[in-house]
Structures are given as structure tokens and as C-alpha cells.
Image (tube, rainbow, N blue to C red; front, side, top):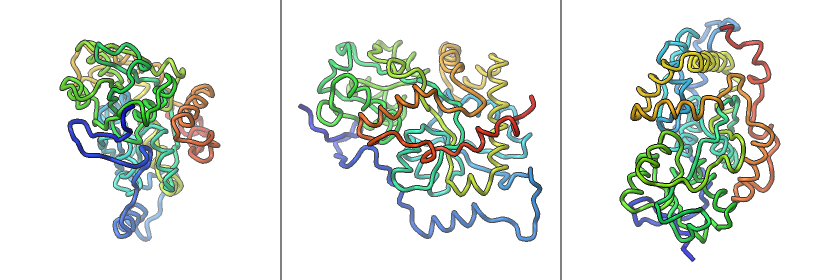
Length: 353
């Protein structure tokens, strides 16, 4: 048996505690100041029903990931600006850090896996997912040549971005589904983003890694073998959702509709103009040109403009993953994590073209 002590890649420091705990403690002074700034309105200034309440917003992303393509296109082509909105896209090391920033209000909206959103809610934070559409079962597990299956990886080191992140959530479920106890049978290594974990793999510090395109293609080219796919678990997955504090959703609906219209226009353009989309991917993600087209083809069919969550089968699998991995006791009712306002009124506010 291998100790359940977790290790940072390349470090001997021991980390204890629940892997899904989200440390969201924010000093009262910082929290209050951020709240005052985010909620402030100029005195005596009236706003029209369709004017954005906050014309400049910060959007948190998990690293620089190809599946954010509609947001990249919208920014590159000035589609947010056409909606009266200035958007800054800010990258985080992982979903746990993004959730902390969302709670601290240093970002206004996070585009992050439902696994991280539910972790924040479980920690007592007033968060909700309010739009979906990124239903990509993107991940696969790649191993050093000596490992042929997850079941055969007992005693090995599995890389994830951060404890409590979607990569951690999925890896634990994949281990349980293949008969291994993630607490006792393997070491789970908190290794950072995909390039960092791939480098750790090359240095002999990680044996199995969870990747999404283009890193799946890069790992394969470097001689690592896919031993399991997320698509073996479910047909789709809440890979990203738009999430915010409940107060921001309630107080800034026009801002969020403007943001979502920009996203929708970016998605439409990405699907209509493949060459433009691939240029945006190459620029933003900075991947080798040979990986751009297969990466685009891998996920574009799983992106939807109407903000839908995954299929019932996909959602059921998501919660079963959490239950079997120890994240949930039972499936959550949707009202605990989901604000349906924008998806349900999609036909009323969506862009005409």
C-alpha cells in the first residue's frame, strides 16, 4: 500500500486535509472593500433597462485552454465591445484558485468546471453557475510505457492540477471505477498546469497524467500511452460553466446578458469560420500548428450557444462520480448550484445574428 500523503511535484512537502476543501477565507476588510467597489453605482445616475451595470468586468479562466475558444474569438474580434462591455480574461493556475478569486471579488465571473463551483458552494460560499454550453468530455489519462491500464497503476503517482480541481475530481473517480482507492492505492500529485505536469512526467516525478487536447496529442507524440478516456465514463460533462456570486447575478443581469451575447457571437463565428477559429487558437494557446486542427475538431461539437447543461445521463454521471469519489453524499437538486434565468430566457435576449 502507498501512503495517502499527497506530494507537490518535485517537492517533499506533505499536505494534509480533504482534497476537495476550498480555502475561501477572505479578510473582512478586503471582502468589504471589494463588495463596495463591485456594488457601487454613481449617485443620481439613472440606467436604462438594457444598459450594462458594470461596463468593465474581469473573467477568470483556468489557465490558457483551447475550449475557451468562443471567448478568445469574441475578444479578438471586438464582439464584447459591440455589446458595450470591456472584458479582461485572467488566467489562474487551477479551479480552486479561481473560486477563491471569485469569492474575494477580484474577478466578476469565472468560467470553470461545475466540480469547482460545487466545491465553493459546499464551503459555504454564495455562488451559482448561471450558464453552460461547454459540455466537453475532454480528458484522457496518459501513462509511462510500463503502465497499460489504470487498474495496473497501483502504487503509482497520478498528476492533477490542484487538489479539489476538476482534474482531481475526475482522476479520483476514474481510480474508483477501476477498482483502486485514491487515498491508499496511489499517490495523487498536485502538479499545476498541463505543460508543468508533462515536464514532471518527463523528469520521472509523475507516472500517469490527466490531459485534454492539445496536450493529449503532445503526450502521445512523446511516447506516452492513453490508458483511459473520460468518454468511457459519460457522453458529456460540465467542463466549463459560467459562475458568479449570487449578488452579482441578481444585481448585474444586463452585464451578464451582454457578456453572454458576446460569447454566443464568438461561438457562432468559431463554428462558421474554421480558419479564423484556428488562428485564434494558435495565437492564444500558442500550440504547435500541427495540433490546432485536431484540437478544434475534438471539442467544437460539444459547445452550445443556448447555455444548456449536459444531458441527464451526463449530469447523473457527474454526481455519481462525486458520490463514488467522496465528493457528494447524494445528487444535488439543481437549485443548489444552478441559476436557470439566462438559459430559460435565451430566446428573449440572444443576438439576432
